[in-house]
Length: 272
Image (cartoon, rainbow, N blue to C red; front, side):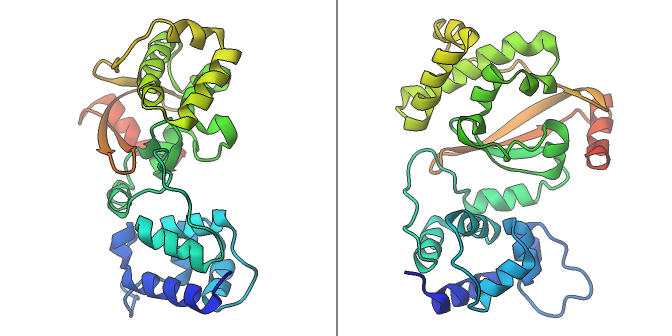
């Protein structure tokens, strides 16, 4: 059962404990008090400022699990804090399992500080959990998908439009790398990975062929090439930061300073 008072008090306390710089926001000269504003938490959580304010004011309907998950991410809650939020919000705490959809506060802080860089957090089955604006400008909003299509692996082998982000001559390489890296999740027995694998084997002859090659540990040689619809070809290096506890990876895309691709990266925010 939802506890309106505890829910409102908990959200207010966590909001006031966060500083703008903790979540990648400028402090600004007119800010007179510490903590985040309600509208800032709402924007970070992907909900309206009015909706969030009503929760803190002990008004309005019971927030859904999706709303609570967004607030947990926006407030950079730990797993224990997230579980408490769900309970006082009237829902069972989400099951903790290797799929790891909840991004740790540490990883979120790093992502916040990469606001001007293409970066994203993915889980072990290739589902994008968060992206910076330049990443969306580069690859599209990969957090919008639902169902099996949440997985980039699934989309790559079933949706031809998903391949437009890379030059056609690189598609065979991407297919091999996707299959090789996805095999690790299947080998670990991740239920979601096994579900995706069976769906792909039934639907994609290309996946079945590449999967039968039993490639393991194959990666990209040096640079990863992107075919942007307005900026053209970008050659980027992908740095990774792995959070083993959450089974997630932070991907950061950079270009050689002074290169043409570096100049194009600077334009991503404008064309995005």
